[in-house]
Length: 319
Ligand code: CP
Image (cartoon, rainbow, N blue to C red; front, side, top):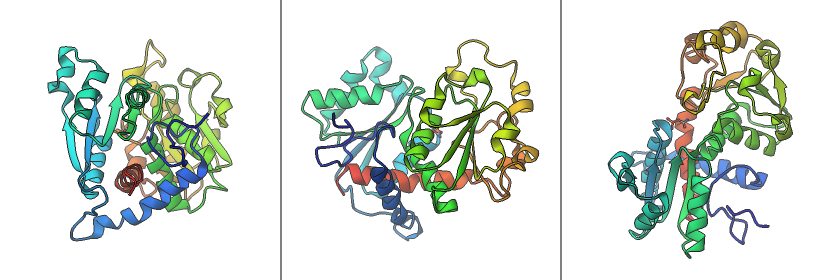
């Protein structure tokens, strides 16, 4: 069966998840992003690739980085950007997700960028558009529940390739709340697809999904062992909004056992980079000395996110 994100020619029609995307598609997105990093250096920070297209940002869940960088990316591609304010939209009066989508589609939308607390919401929209003969409207998943955050995974891969050049001899450690993290799932699928030989997850048992090894990762419960010799350390926030029940004694206890401190980071390679998708909780999953230290590439991740999102939207728009 054809991947529902790809059209009959193997080109990207929607971006819903990294899982199942061929390595060539991921590499093409990263390669396409490279020249877009230079658009920001120009006096006029725009290219006309999506001129006349309408991009609707539908964020049913809060966001700082993703929503803003999608807006900047679409504007740099010369698209018209419409940010639906969910709190003042008719969703608050009980309008269903698909009715909202139908109404926005009737306004000649070309692309929906969707963040939703429910896993599968962007898939549902893409299926609905296909079933109603509107598959020409592209859907980009900007984070759905604990399922996937594909553009975050891609900008993370762009960042790794920028600093490490090549994926084929890296050890990458993902530290933190993997259980509730859509970012971790997208990172794992991207890293294994791009050929990273050693992907580790480092967390207490209560913050790891059962059977995570089947995704091709090594599991560590001891952070010292998990960080030893790592080239890349990717930290994750405790996703309290998705936790049910007490999975940890306290955030202080968590920091004591799993917080990324300079002493723990010293177990990784001396040129290891430290990444975080944001938002960061200093003193919970990461010490400020690391977050603001010389190995952190957390803010460059945000900047690269614009170019990567430009690449995704340009490819979807056929540019
Ligand atoms: N990384 C990320 O998704 O951040 P936001 O929630 O601010 O978009």
